[in-house]
Image (tube, rainbow, N blue to C red; front, top):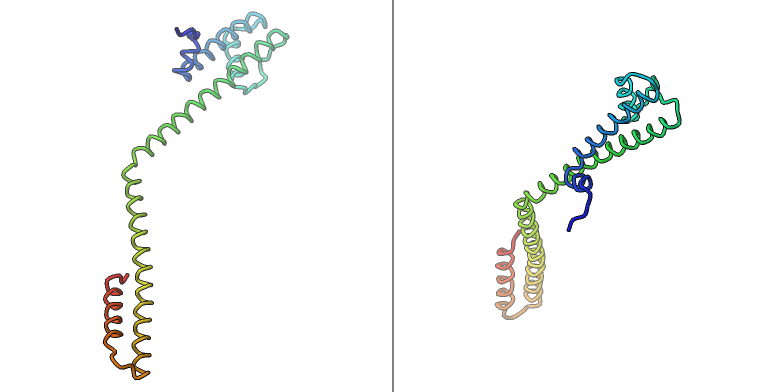
Length: 173
């Protein structure tokens, strides 16, 4: 059973309209109280309540009694709270839409995954190419050394060089 107050339920589901309605109610009531207690017109009371709620505080109309100053504090806090709630609601909507945009870009994430995988493949190919260069050089140096030493049958050395060159051609980046 949900025992929460209707205002609390309204505030949790529709914070901006609820807070603006609450502020309007506080301004209307405070303006009426101000106009009666301070003996000014109702429109002057509305002006005072709006200026107080927005914390502008022009000072052209201000409460003279302690009781009205306490009402002014309630009006000020309600105005400040309303500004905070409205700002928070707008910020939450912006964050929510940005998060939705991130979720809508899954294809871009897949593209990044492909690019990262391709870079890894090229890295391995480059490393194979570098090792291939080393193998070709080693086989060529061994063939030259055997030839200089009067090396007898150079066929195994030539075959090793041929294999290294073929492997190098296959992995050439």
